[in-house]
Length: 259
Image (cartoon, rainbow, N blue to C red):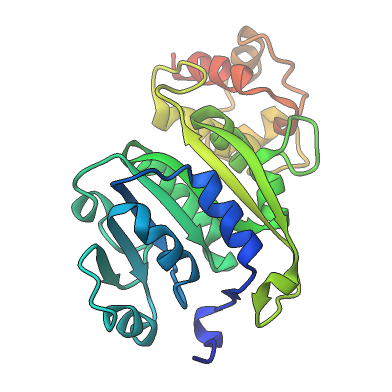
């Protein structure tokens, strides 16, 4: 079957990478698994022997029909955009293992949907563009550190499973890839009183990346009146940039601004 440009399809074809993904998922007998973007099914059929049920989300109706033609009762096919599907409504017996070889243009929205629904999963093994993976795993003070890094560290343990060359796919993409394993934390790494407000502060701190923390937060809609003082009360210099803050500092800042 020919890849479709409209869906940004690059089919995984390297059996070594497939085995590394399956190993990282740590599947045992009678697992419940959710796969996004099964494509030709190379991961699907490798994982199925371990599964009590394997849910797959496939946007391409032709690929979904090909999977359906196998008449495998443990394979539950959801035809549609994974971003628009109701995950809690479909995955009704958590925890699940999430495995995905994602079209790279939806990496960020998928990550935030995973974040919102992390309670459904025991582990996630996800293929990303290498640069996106670097942003998820970045440390404070580095060029890749940003909103994604903070949220990833706050809510997950993350590790690199393997680097993946463009030649592992058909058609061959122009960029390298990386497989990450994410394990949802039982509770956020740093306690915050209001997680939604914490997220607003993190986003505000990076909304004007090259500006100071004070100017970024002001630009994000935080009241300028006594903003400098509130930042200082959190133990942070208002002239620092958001990219230098540890998640503990973001938590302290959120609590100060919320109060």
